[in-house]
Length: 565
Ligand SMILES: Cc1cc2nc3c(=O)[nH]c(=O)nc-3n(C[C@H](O)[C@H](O)[C@H](O)COP(=O)(O)OP(=O)(O)OC[C@H]3O[C@@H](n4cnc5c(N)ncnc54)[C@H](O)[C@@H]3O)c2cc1C
Image 1 (spheres, helix red, strand yellow):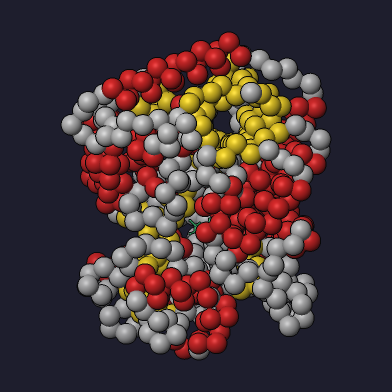
Image 2 (image 1 turned 60 degrees about the vertical axis):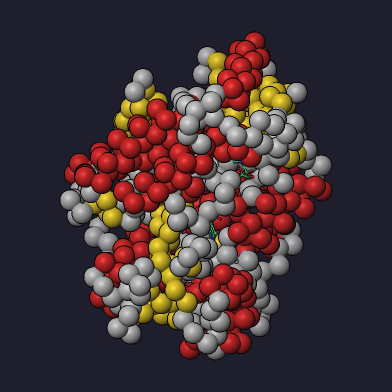
């Protein structure tokens, strides 16, 4: 098995990259651990940002420059400003392209795409399809892939990225149906494998979002950037942590504490419920800690004043989720919400052309860190990133393949495939007392408790020590299910190895960063410290855990300023 270009991941970023490469005549295939349209992108609700100016009569009110500034300010000035300008300028053609490919967006009476306000944005610029935007976008791209005859390896799990002489050799992967390991040669690889949300308990992310693509790059020696920045979404449904889209507040929803107060007035007097996510999440946690939550666990998100008609027209998915999973009819009563893990701002270090340090290896989407989100991502900018940088990754790979590289490193690739097979055999014969599930749950709980919305040296040190202990335990983990065929316990065990590595980069990175910036809020260092910490964190694997370095932030357009809303 070999390809000119192999793409890992069939979410929005992977499929957009595949379409671009294929349109440029590149031979390529997409490999995904789930059927393509089950990728987490399908769950995106609220929308995608682009300064289309549809929601206003003044056609010049919003601009891509304003969108760029909002994004940079939202990022607490850690995003690379040159990359952010690419993101927001390209937003407009990318959204119209999806429209022309058939995405059924919600429409204004004028026929133009509907836009709603989202947190941290100066204008209503989040384009949406009810509260099922990701579903509609992903199906559109899948149709385009089918039309272009792009082949998919469905339900294949990527295990190892193989690099020789700083050049891409290919991938070792497992066919999940029969559990067989295979070497797939590739001149170029695009990693589009999504985020690492499942490293935390109380996550809105799909079970498959274990960050395995990020871990694979790290284990191959590619640096990870800014891993300590994890987004906690303010409103996830109490009990299940299913996401309640920011669109609910964008449509006018209010947050109340147990005293009946719209408490956001205390924290962000002018933006109120539409302050950026890090600020709203911290405000909710502060209210609950001060005894002003319900059952010491949640606050209320109230939409009743919007009226049943608007709720069922604009937010039908949320209406259904609250009814089914909390027994709450949001047209009549408020719903219980609490913050939950939501997004991985950090990821595989790459530049604004999606290039990593390794020739032929590219990254895009949530697994990458370009960086356009810095210390805090604005809602609606992630779907946007998948399309803008998915296209760019496809283009960069096509340019690279145009220079005529040959397939290389195949002997090493075959050796690594044999090594993998041997390690699987060992895993099947390990008879430890600890189960995969125990270490998995233990890790996720420890991460949510100690590396959560608020952090401090003590809790972070506790997490770092605990992860080291779990890493030792992991070597003794056996499998209760001995089959090779579609063994999900085996897949979880494989994911867990990477999750432990990533947890280390997150917790140790957070312990090192002695300041508060965006989503990284330290009780013991409560202010932003531009003098010492206005730089990206890089983490590479060392003998005994991650080794840290730094990288400059592009500040070519705006001077950092105080972040107020
Ligand atoms: C519930 C929810 C709602 C959201 N709503 C919004 C929103 O309204 N607006 C917004 O901008 N953002 C939203 N986001 C964020 C956004 O949806 C994601 O960041 C984005 O869709 C990620 O796309 P992706 O292509 O990078 O990865 P994904 O869509 O996560 O796809 C990852 C792919 O990688 C594959 N994969 C992973 N590991 C392996 C492996 N080892 N081997 C093989 N394949 C592998 C998976 O099979 C999958 O195909 C939301 C996120 C969540 C969780």
